[in-house]
Image (cartoon, rainbow, N blue to C red; front, side, top):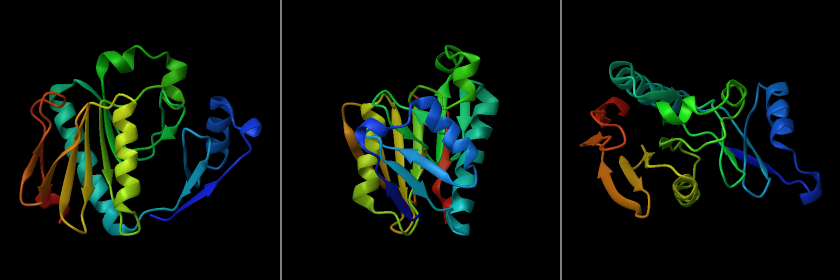
Length: 192
């Protein structure tokens, strides 16, 4: 996915509400904001990446429909992180009590929390080092489990708090949600 960055002077940064309004008024574009206030414009994904992402979200949604432990979000959802960034993972999940602790107004805008679980799915134009840095940012802001999926190399990097990237798996294996997503299994063959 191609990305373009716009840098603003520190004294000309959007407030959270202004940034939300800016994103809504430009809804044909997808944005993220770094902790430093830089706005990232992201291009749409290609067909294969879109297909893979929809498979991941569908599997997560099916699991959540059975267990009803939280809320599932797709790649169009932005989360306002404790470090000031607004990021949009490709798929994510938030435990019920954390979601319900937000006001309705907070739920309508960019929720001010870090998801418990995130998936970042690399497209052909993504750089591994940059995406790994983004995964570290998720962990630093409270994510309890993260999967960085690199379809080109058929690899999945598994991230956990205080351990960082701790494991690499191939597409010949299933991924398990462990303690965070008890009972969730993702068969990597779905993404081939």
